[in-house]
Length: 443
Image 1 (tube, rainbow, N blue to C red):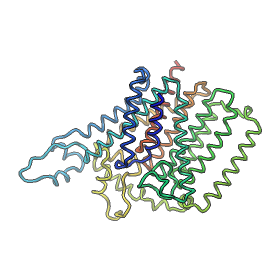
Image 2: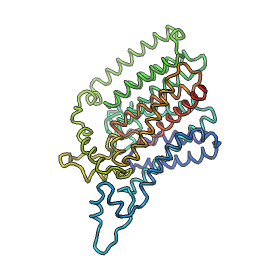
Image 3: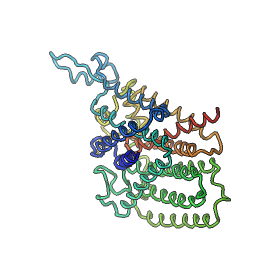
Image 4: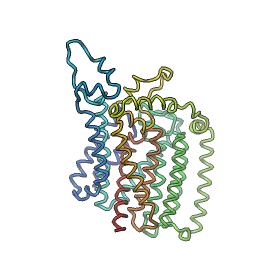
């Protein structure tokens, strides 16, 4: 089990980039294979079967990606979307047309298939932790990773953007990106820490609950300051949603009654809040991150400029899409002339749109299935009042955390990074187990 935790920690630490050509991707995938081999070898089948819901959804994604690599006859292939233009370019006299896979870039699709390894590893780690009653340990690993990334971001901010502190060559230099390559992904991870901290607090069953409030409050204040340092507008909105979700967790659990918190702790908390807010105000007053957060024009955002062309591209390749991992190459073919610039799009910065472009109706159907399950499970988890099981607290934290990452996916691609994809998978597993536990209690 220790080996699995160590490898999983490394998976999180080196999984902050989404580019296929990053050296860290190879390391992350090898680590994921080791995690999979370790957990499958040491985890009983019945513990894995308890997560059959997430595993079936994962299998559906894998089957869809594999289907895009199956060669099709020339007549069928050229009739799907706008592929006839590519067929014409590859037609030569005296040479027969060849069978081609649905994907317009099979290498990119194959890379997507391999990139799913960390997700499978995460699901199996949850199965192993449930068998060993180590959910709290897994929660602490997640909080530890996010805390470490926040510390790196703080050092980047304090150093004025020293290149030596950035783990990726292509990144938001000058921003507090932490262990990620993108400021928005760092902000999304930090926002997820808010419901996780609330879950850590409400899941406690010992007499140290009152004492734990002050460290939790201190961590929340630090997270707020770190999110502001990223300069991410989306991160600021996620922070507000995360704070509301964490407060709702505390209220709904009924495990943090005010009469159990001593006046000294409350006074210390208020004092700490004022100190942190004052320090954050002084630090961020003239920071580039604050200027970006407050002054950059939303209307000039490249995401809004490319939205309409991307919608047209999605409809052009309906119903089956262009293939996973093909977006950067396909967009170059259809990029509007008035949007040609030194900047380039490696992703659509809207995962719903990118999924529609790359996977068409089958991909959107899988997403709809995920969202329906998510909505039903959220309603089940929050319908009940107090629950004396830590798993329910973790499941509620998972519902808020997954909601934050889904919201972030509307304007970015956080789940395409191995680290955030792994966190999302873990939180979904907690939701699934919590929902099943509530259903069992109701019966």
